[in-house]
Amino acid sequence: MTVSVEPAARPRREDMKAVGQFAFELPATWRADMRVPVRVYADDALLAPMLEGDAMTQLVNVATLPGVVECVYGMPDMHEGYGFPVGGVAATRMPDGIVSPGGVGFDINCGVRLMALPLTRTELGGRLEAFVHQLSRSIPSGMGRGSEWRLTDAELDAVLTGGSAHLVRAFGLGVEGDVVNTESNGRLDGADSSKVSQRAKDRGRGQLGSIGAGNHFVEVQAVERIEDARAAQAFGLRQDQVTVLIHTGSRGLGHQVCTDYVKLMDGRTEAYGIKLPDRQLSCAPVSSPEGRDYMAAMACAANFAWSNRQRIGHVVRTVAARELGIPGADVHTIYDVAHNIAKVETYDGQLLCVHRKGATRAFGPGNSEVPEAYRAEGQPVFIPGSMGTGSWVLVGDARSAKQSWSSACHGAGRTLSRHAAKRQVTGSQLRRELEGQGIVVRCPSSAGLAEEAPIAYKDVDRVALVVEGAVLARRVVRLRPLGVIKG
Amino acid sequence: MSTSSRTIEHVGEWRVELRADTLEDVFREVALVIARAAGTASGSHGPWEDVDIEARDREALLVDYANELLGRSEVEGRAYDELRDLAVAEAPRPRLRARVRGRPVTAWRSPLKAATYHGAELSRDDHGWRASILFDV
Figure (cartoon, rainbow over the protein chains, first blue to last red):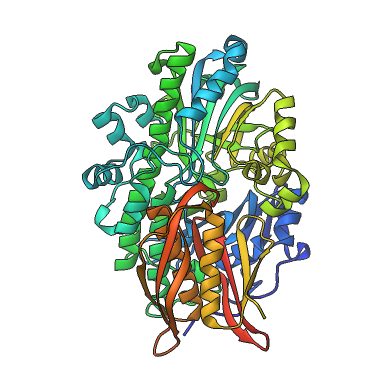
């Protein structure tokens, strides 16, 4: 028998109460099964599409989960997903609140790493195209294109438990500064590779160091504008500086971990007396055997994702050395942050399991988990826009602890489906437009390029302004794209 | 009625609706949808492989079966487009048994990560069987 309750109608604009210039709240009384209110950070323009689709209903569904505390949050880039909306944040009380694999998503620790090169766009000059081209030749991208390195069982287990630090220390694929400037130092505690299925290991063992497909990319950029000079200096960013942004995750390994545990927990919800408005929210108490096993497997997938970006970062250094004559150690990892993850964090003495689905951690100044060099300013936060528009580097605001469980948004947020995007623009047309703007494009699939067209996304500048206005994070620099490598 | 599939709009992911005369044909069509999405397959078929899936209900059987094919496809590098000895039982628990085989994918297109339970449907009406699956892409 399916354990479910009938979902209610979609929230309407008049149901939402403004609780700040960029915050709207739906009370916990709006639907009978809600345990906490729903709050979204948006302006009117960003709120409208959230209400038109199922994103808000999905956030309401999240507000019904057992053990959820205080409020569930929607980031300014929130859009419809499955189970959790993309851009949804929720915390459950430890140890008996739930953890939901669907609340993390299939691409566990999908995230971004920003690296800075010690040269400006002007200094890069006419070498841009060759640099982008060589990156595209050196970094496997696209579905079915994995890595030439097929990890043995022992190598894979070491990566799953050791994270990106293992790649640096055991294989020399990077420098210690990469580890320091990675969320959780690139390794979640509690990883147990025996909780990862053989199918998951087999999907991932040939994929370490590859981008994958969908919205994943590597982008070469330049600092276009500095909004916060002090934070920019702390991060090591200066006007016109060339950067490389890597966006990918745990590939097939993470997808399979999520698949395995959504299925497992779907079969256990009745036993735990959990009623769900959407089966994709299947979950179990964090303290239960299923919850503990998932946390151990998810940690493995998160460590794999950090290792994936670590290895790609190493390739970026190698290509920069070969093509631009830059010593590898001079290519600096600004930060590496997760988008899809569940983490145990403490707020006002309460131990919570914070789910961030398409959302990024955004710790403010003084937090001990922020690298020492950045601690006076706060954690770097990245909002990649669409190719052809721009991206933002922000810095976490301590007030976000009470506003969003120290979270900010992870991107501009889709507004058009992939099919709708392809109806509006062709890949070849888009390629010409981007190249007309001086952006070098490397993408094997024209259809894949069109699916990720700028028109498919919200305005990243508006999203970044709302993030700042809602005091989730503060804008530091705007990056403009120079070259795009898409899967 | 012939077997068919069509895309239903979804902002972030890919929802597919399938129609078929029989329950077995629904599962055959799911395999074809996933194989076509994978990309261009060529060359000889690989060996027949056994699939045996039991689920708590029909919808879970549909999704778990799709995930089984997706996982195999990525690991083996094949598009599983042929099934034989397909048997779908509804009691005591929904169960699917079949033999599947696939051809090597030479040009991958599919960004399909997984099939989800979100809004999954598998039901019968006056026109035959109807199924709906949302894939994470």
